[in-house]
Image 1 (tube, rainbow, N blue to C red):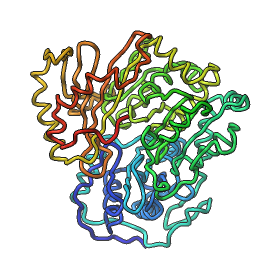
Image 2: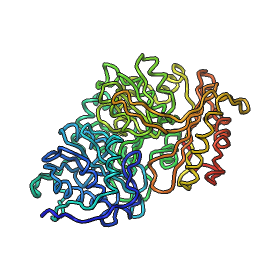
Image 3: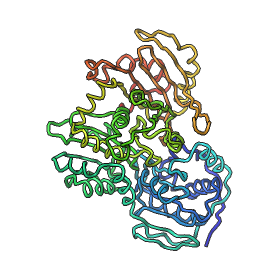
Length: 542
């Protein structure tokens, strides 16, 4: 029986950079998730009898939320629901399923790299029929609807057995529980030279991949160990856990320091890698060499032709504005366009759909291509493996040669997490007001060549996105970017990005902190970070 339940709006259901994220207890509040899901459906048209893909990263409340989404989707008219077994579905795998099966869209339950558990974070987002995150006009419509919603529709039915493969009838529709890995693994086999990568492992190449007790464990075991022949035990923490084993599933040098230490040891593996909560981010560390996400994007783009799926070359590169400009040098060398977009994978979708870009990336460890419409952690690692097998060189050697050819972009990000929102907003407002007077200003040995509040004009649909981050450019090629993040669930997160280009190979191997020392010192004083946030130091440096 379909029930129509009266409800009242909840405040603050505006999706951020990648969906709606709040603390788990907020989502567990009766009606909170239901209101948002109904708001999604109320803003869609033409889905009667269509297919909806549903899955999540396995975090706490994932299974319960999926049951609600299934019952509401059928009650609202969807005819077929595809669900990953156990409720497990990585974000890039969900994107692939939407595209492969011609689904109307998908609902992904994840807070990405944020911590999980009863007191951790939870999230939900809607992906459109192209497999990518809903564009801003849709998310804004969902938010508007959430402020006026008065009822939601849901089936009054027993829960679906999420662990049993197969189809079952529910009301006027069908729920299909599918293997979450099979279709994704098949796609990867079409893109990469699995025989060559398998040969690399047979030669003694050693991999350590940490799934961080999150969604990529089953994918990594199937692909790396079963299909490619990596040694047993190459995949760590392969079982998805509701609280990610008590760890923070963010593949960076803070939360995956054990991988860094392993890679820097004298007998470390040839490649250490990791992915995050929902499988869309990646960490790449060769023996003795960490590869920054910005550099990884540039190096993958420069070498993509070595993989079968990109043998004809790439059409363009897109990067988020805060990402270093290393990829710009590659695009210039290849004679292809470089697109600079706001942060958020949704901004890449139009470029990919229009065939204007092939490879995209963000400094926050997200890299992907036109094979899906999401960033894809395992894809990036597989492309690295394909490149390593084809070039028969180490990660360190590839990095050094790339810098010598294209120059090095020294780069660092300073995160001030969970600061008071009022103070963070005041900082941005004050710095924005000062922008007109910064150009030409000399501070020590540095001279500001330009300063602006980044705005983006979409070359495909003509839409405009303003206030996407403050950029301070210097005459020596340095850059400082200030931006408030949209992925946190408490307070505000101020991110400060610092970059400098170095063309001289003789100076490309100094420590990043030393290469950026003057810009780092200036970044705090220029924005008066301590004054507005009360923080004398960042929470995380990457």
